[in-house]
Image (cartoon, rainbow, N blue to C red; front, side, top):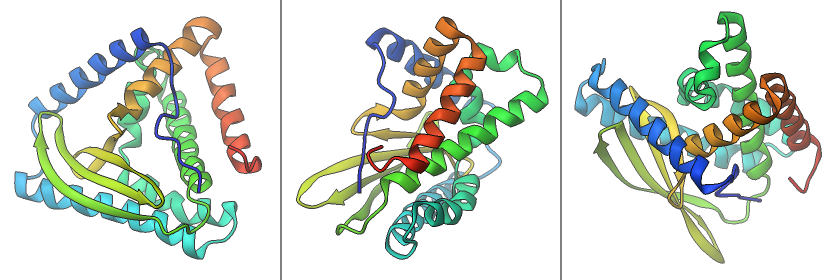
Length: 214
């Protein structure tokens, strides 16, 4: 199993800006009101994270090839992640410039990338296990605090942020995937344009599917 807690590192300034934008979005969404009660949200959040983590272990233990793991994980990723809002926040201002088919296309690519990443990372059963430590209220919704145990290496802290029972951010050892993704994508769009970002996503998916060293 190969695990990278910081998959999209970029310059600190971009990361700081992205974190502020992500927090602003999530806080605004919370102020608009939730369709679930607080108790229902807590239960839904815990169930979503448990479903994801159980699926990762199941894929690693009982689905031998990377392709089999990706097929098994795809419906779980679609069900537990808020892919639409992850895509929207990841793109930032560029999202507003896309028509509906363009938005759907980008969201689908992002879902494939997330699924392929998990299928590549969780590739062999090396005694891994997850622990759910707490489910807390957060201005952004719910946060399910967990850790990945991977003896003999140190555990990895994984905090899942959810709203209405769906994950919109994963924070690994204090680093927000959503914020880093937004900073990374903004840098690519600014330097090379949106078509280059789509090419990079496709290239990343191909590498995850073909290169054992990814």
